[in-house]
Image 1 (spheres, rainbow, N blue to C red):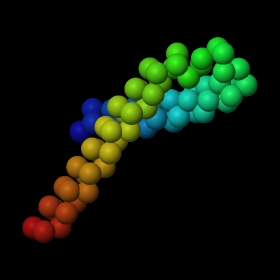
Image 2 (spheres, rainbow, N blue to C red):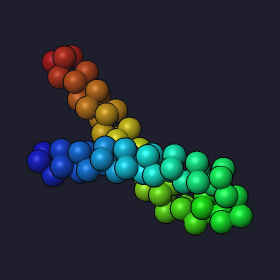
Image 3 (cartoon, rainbow, N blue to C red):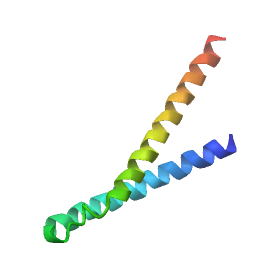
Image 4 (cartoon, one colour):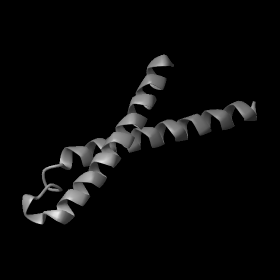
Length: 72
């Protein structure tokens, strides 16, 4: 369970970092659209999506386990 907790914490940090970076890229793209910052930062979007999906799966699994324990 330590590995799952570590991965969940890492995914949460990745979500925060990628979210802030995408916000900064969006602001830079508004100021200078010809540099195409948003087009060159797709890896941030992929990282955000993957870590958000992982966090969602972990949270759903935790809730399902809690429900299963309460039914016993």
